[in-house]
Image (cartoon, rainbow, N blue to C red; front, side):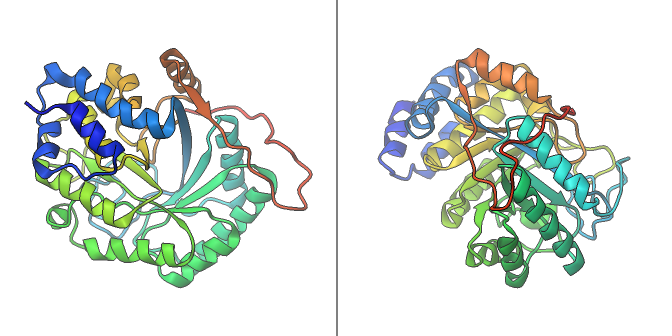
Length: 344
């Protein structure tokens, strides 16, 4: 029987746990879940204490994607009944940043659908980012699809702090979820962003029919990427997508996956991302024992937990929300974002 405290000790010594140990985490008996969570929390507490970082995203362009990602309701092969629209006006992107700051989010993520952004879309997003940086003390992440180095440098120059580009799954399983781009295409975008001096946010999705070995391979691939942040999505099937009939996840499975990523990435921000409410259900608070970051107010095409409810969950755990004080760009006279209504 695997001693999970031993795995925590290894992680705290920056030793790589074995594949056998990794399988033991994912295949642990549900009766040992609290023992596993306690071991993961030992690592989380060392590097992140009892603080939680909040992040909020804006779906700035929805639908009409050319890609065939089987998990995505915005893909070319999806018939899911979602809202579809082009790139939002810049003022709406700025308003979204104000809402994120009011929700106590440390980071605001601007996301668009599509294989790669058009140059005019990059220009519009860059202009919005410049305005946000003059008004709202918040970090900005962008998730824009495949990027070249020139585009990444333009975003960096505009004030973008971080690029999100998930690996999603293992290289071996990637062709089972998408055929219109490769795993190597995703790695190339990450390389371009890093070359431009941008921080990297990259994670994956649990529950798309992959094997335990694929989750382990994903976690190990991310060790090579060395991202600043790892979002772990738990698959929330959308009607009308190729993967809508995947076997449902249990809360226990989701928690075990988070513990695995904590052991393999002890010092990296680990965020509970899409599918949290759907898959973790009443066990959501337990996810903050391995993870230290969470989304508020929803995802791209699915609603999420309102910020005030997330604040209460964190408070009930005895944890604290971390909000870094960020300087505004020179020339701004506004010291804090205006109060705005939160949306769910």
